[in-house]
Length: 341
Image 1 (spheres, rainbow, N blue to C red):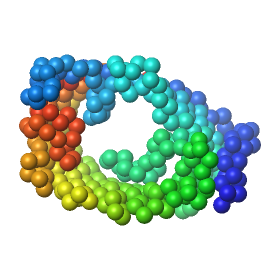
Image 2 (image 1 turned 90 degrees about the vertical axis):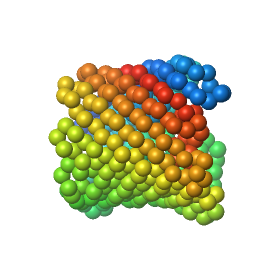
Image 3 (image 1 turned 180 degrees about the horizontal axis):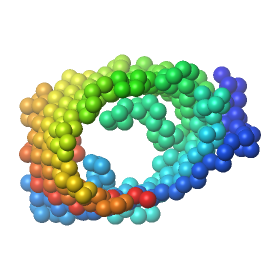
Image 4 (image 1 turned 120 degrees about the vertical axis):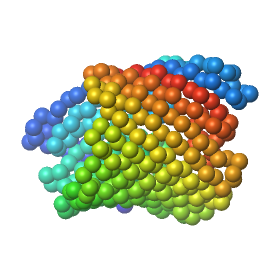
């Protein structure tokens, strides 16, 4: 097994140079992404001052304040990519993280791809949550396309500390993805396959009905750390109106259980302007953890910049099992600008 690992790593490095003259020149691109803004909160919790303001971006629904710089050299036979990121500009403007940095080479007309480094491949992600990826994980990822729309992969993690291959294999993972055009897409990903408590991610994306988005996903941690989290997302586009429903369930080893239902709708007003409203209610096995919230969002796209104004009211001064972010009951308004190049 050690010999196999060394050979695959050598092929990755050697292949980048060995096939350079036989392939078209790869495309070199650079990009940047900035998410910045502020949030105003009216808090009820005693530990938080009322009517406070804080630096905060929106970032596609995540509370952060982020700056990215990316680069890719993307070719049919070889390539590389990187992303430098700071996740909290206001608090740590000089704290730069390498979110990913990798090189790859392909063989057999693209049927086999070998990626080495800090991974950014999403071949085995679920469609809605992006469950099951190895984003940012260091290691060697082998991706094969043996037939048609079937893709399979194997990930072997590496660290800066010398590790026995047998131990690394315990933390390795296997992935599979299959798409039948205009019917469905399916992903399967098992991580830590050699441990007593591996994690399994599955995703089903229904493609058979025009204008319908139907995505069913689940995360399962097996063994003594049992943790099962299925979820479903449905949306249907009716012209400018798009109603949606998100449902999520938790069943944990601690015997805590939770059920979250979140209906909503988006309306396209034209000229890059969209409004969205959502209501969420979390019902927990411990009734004192029940949480509900209301959220409204206005988004205005202006070329490469999108402006978000988000208002949210959360009705309980605590976190539920699922809805844990922004645990204090408050009314908040977030203004954010997202720019990408």
